[in-house]
Length: 563
Image 1 (cartoon, rainbow, N blue to C red):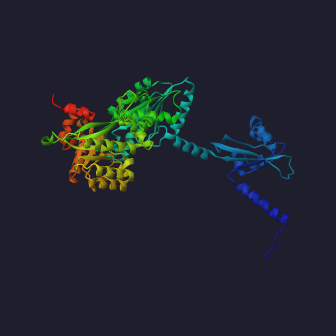
Image 2 (cartoon, rainbow, N blue to C red):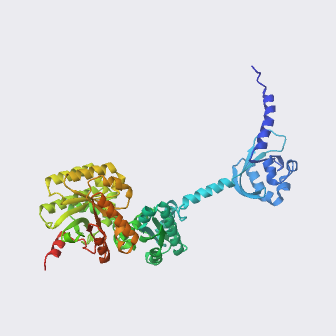
Image 3 (spheres, rainbow, N blue to C red):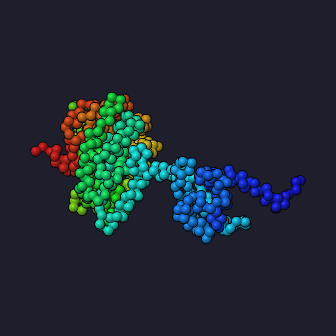
């Protein structure tokens, strides 16, 4: 066994090890004594100074770095370190002809030394690349990588600051939530790369037309938000209408096809009534949903909704008991000439406000889903429809009455049981009642939806898929189930008469439906030109304001009676 060396021997061997370590260090190291004279410096520090080591060691600091720099930058920090206080900072330097950022630390050394005390170790590290990477990551976090506009997270912080400014009523800003119309068609037909290019184009288009002080952010897939400082909604609308016209004129060409877009937006004032950024975004989003429900490619100011959305949920909870929910019906016509006299009805739920004015579902259904009461509404609608059948109030000419069912209810086994029990207690001729199921449900919970569809079919109900074409990934599942009708997505049908690409897509959907033995329906038919095209396209059913507006059952019956 080798003999352990004595402590003096260990220290004697450690000195060259320390020296080798200091020499090889990439950090910049030097030691300054109590008289402010360099007593040690490693090669990295000498390179920084541009001097050989023998000219640095034992030289006054002021002689090496210059009197002004010595007095202004080094002396205060040496004094701070000698007082055993923490001293660390970042400073720009030029190292080997290259500008860099150095992280510099002064530390008092409590060691035995022949030099005047106290000794101070100065350690400097080049952190230029680290700071650049941090800046890059910060920029990446604050900027939407695809479009180059502000990110959702950063926009949230900016909005919170804007809300805080308005708390004392000296400021007022406007927030606008923007949602592209028809974008999903481009994504589905042309692919995501094409969709990404469209988003970049639209972001640039908005950037070029907004005010220089406005802040634009991408907050979702095809959703943008615009914050206009010290600007009323009325003033903001002037800018937004310019943006809307530009987007309406925008064309995206791909593989010989030309695609158009629209834009819907919701505005809200940011003033003392807004509690935080989330509340501002919720208001703007609610107004945007109203704009889309009213026909898209338009803007709605939240003030025009009487700021009623926050109270809506409480109203709905009460309305289920006091019958302020009301059923409306919209006609669904067959397009084939020999069956033109027969028709079906879609059930639409409305809520009466305090003045008796009916509010469309877009004003409260989303809130009902969020607060978990949508299944209660779906049950109420079913009960009302079955009661109407029982009272024989539906015309004999009515083929099928269609009820919209939420994804929440479809995923509820309790709702399945409730429907089957209600049908058993109120037997109907087969195919008089049908459910419209959102296509998205096939993506969110396939197994539950398949069970629901099969159970309802076995109970004698018809099934239609609503918004078909919004997600073609669901097609394989849909084709294998006993589904009667595919109701085309409104983005496909609302402007189909003047758009050859949309016409091709609708024709393709009709061919797909025919091949798997299903009917097709087109909604949102707003004018006679569109209605005429749909009738000639092979689509089986048509629905929309051009064919009949939603009305109560009593109003429908009165309208159909001969004069």
